[in-house]
Image 1 (tube, helix red, strand yellow):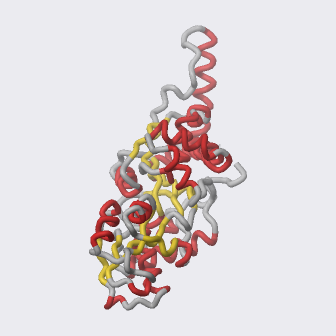
Image 2 (cartoon, helix red, strand yellow):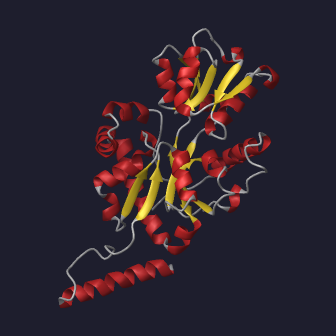
Image 3 (cartoon, rainbow, N blue to C red):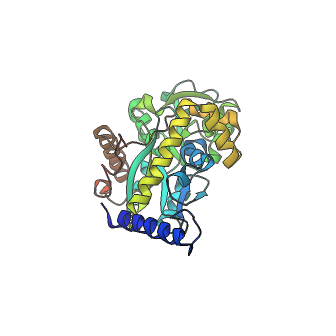
Length: 318
């Protein structure tokens, strides 16, 4: 039993005793505990966190949470690195490129797909082998998937220009013909399709199944692992709702974010929200991402990501 858990139980016993004698009002034992600041992006892949808040699961698990929403996983991770959050959720590469800037501790996988990240081709490009201008988001899973596509279709790096961009700009670049293709996560591929593009592949087609990690600061993990376990339990409960009752989950997401129900329902078909431990297959995939980042100069050297992983922190049978 950790010191943190012992101290929480001591607080519970002490508060209950004082309340019984009339010196304190009966109140949740953790009412005075500081809120755990959780940073997430603003799209449905983070629905486990939104639904957990909407359903009151954090409170039921005995933790106070401040859910901070950012434009994407990158900004959420920046908040964690800057000490403005205690826990954040983002994709593997997004976390790896920041591991040399802060003591980060990935705790568990909270999302798995292989279909959410898609290759969009502009009108007139019928096959990935015709790509000559590839839009990409440097250092992201979009960048990684672009590299896998180049390899899968024997595209000569000397004949393909890589055009860096932010995700929201990719559809417009494609429609204007400034790029022939881009690999990115939703909603950007669907946005491009609405403007005349078409989807050619998903990340699974080029050998990549994407995951999102729940990652804590080292300080938070050291100070209160029991609270982090409680947060993950709440997210696990909410994630089960996203799988068993998508309509209920989508309504919860809308209540928390204003994302339309139909948007969440559509996106949910391409992803699985499930809190789970890291696996050997995950590690093989993560090693490929780390190698890609180093080989392409996104990181100065191979990131020692395995040193930070907290495999076993989440028990899948919990």
